[in-house]
Length: 504
Image 1 (tube, rainbow, N blue to C red):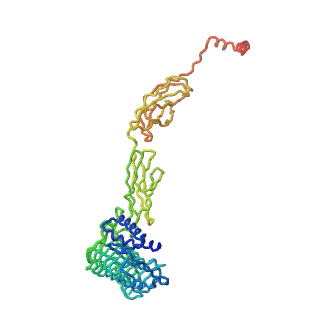
Image 2: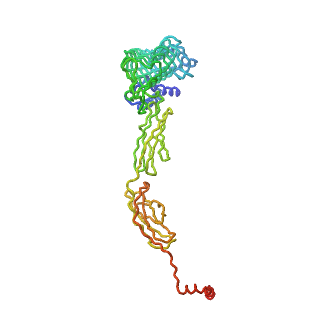
Image 3: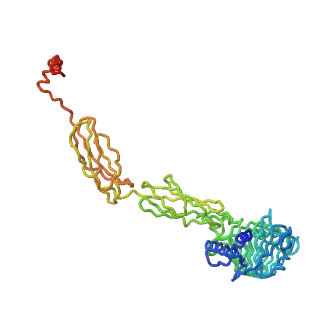
């Protein structure tokens, strides 16, 4: 049963999605997943477009035997409204008539290991004559007429491969159906999807390619159908002689057309010029520049600054045909980060080139860069006090000098003492505003020196003006000669005698 629940979660996505009319795409997607999980975990399988979920039994079909039936039609004939007919992989050579409100679910539509219904070149492969039927997960091929013929309302046809038929899908006097996420290809005669007296249907996220004449043909009797997020590449992509909407008027997105050659000046993934549908006045006002499902995401961000801290917000980034799975930041200061909203603190004021790179669930990427300007704090420290300390002394001896100032922003302050001899103290360690800074120096030659001080705040490094100077004098050492010293200098032999007499 767990396998079946997982299958329902995958294939009934579009069934619930169709019920969520009026919400945005992302809200519908999240709501859909929640509803599906709720239904499948409780064992209740919802029918398409049903006001109230119907709980029914599951009937299994396997052409290899060992299940309830080996033929799909036998299972349908023995089902009741609300049942699910689950078909395991295999090839079923049948022409199916669905005349009961059921879920008809194939195990896999993959061409390598699929639930295949082969019509044997005769009539319709699947003919739906009753309302509210779900058909998902099949490869449907080799009809003599139509792959899926629909003559009813509120049906959901999703997640199928409909290939190599005379016509792919035909809606005949059928309204309010939802056809999505199907591969409709290589159908031999006239159209991939045909509308006849069918209104208010929705076609989305289908790939309609390599059909012999038209991808979609809508005759003059069919109106108010909505067709968007489909990929077209056919001999003639579309024909419409009536009034239908070839785009989503909430998302402002249309379809991908192989023969559209318009430009995209603003690089938003939507063509700047409209795509005209053959046969009438209908237009796709928002043609996609890339196939749906292969559109790269669109990276964008805003930011706000407070001193050296910047808040980056990439919530405005989006992916029109999937989800953004990662947000990578290069902050322009040799550091990186990740996340949709992130704070980053810079060490220095200045200008930084910040780059955001996003990746979507299909592996496509987009990047955008913005210049972040963090100007130097306009309030540097005030002019420091005149340095204080000894004003005279001996060269070669260390002396200490001090000064202080304040910073109006309350930043810490570093000081630089200029000793007046082409040397300085280097910037001191930062100390609180108003606290006195000290530095020591020893001059190597005699002379007069002008000491001055300036300050800068941390971390802005806004510098004050120089303080007034303090003049320091370092005179030469003078030799003091007494008469006794001069006597010894004139009688050098007396010094050894005195040392002997004095016992030195």
